[in-house]
Image 1: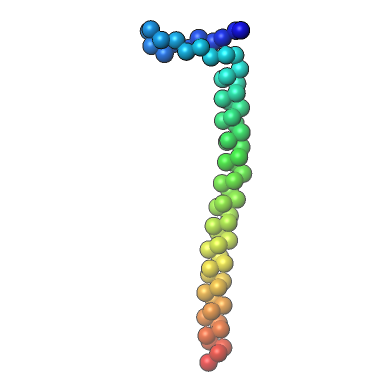
Image 2: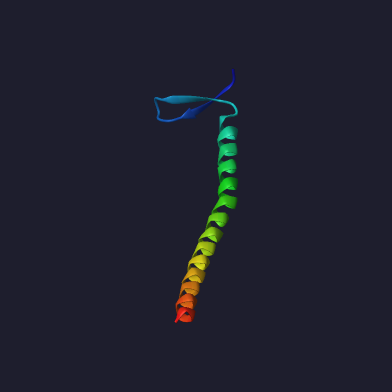
Length: 68
């Protein structure tokens, strides 16, 4: 089994099998891509919620005005 030796201190070594750095990079890319499309969705949802609240306030004001 081929391994990569990573030097931690002058006395300790960590043995990592080949492919581990590739797997770590793949996981980081996957998480980055997920964040890339989820973050804009949540920002647009917040904008929609703010606009929805403004519209509800306007509706309430108009209802009060026309009920008189």
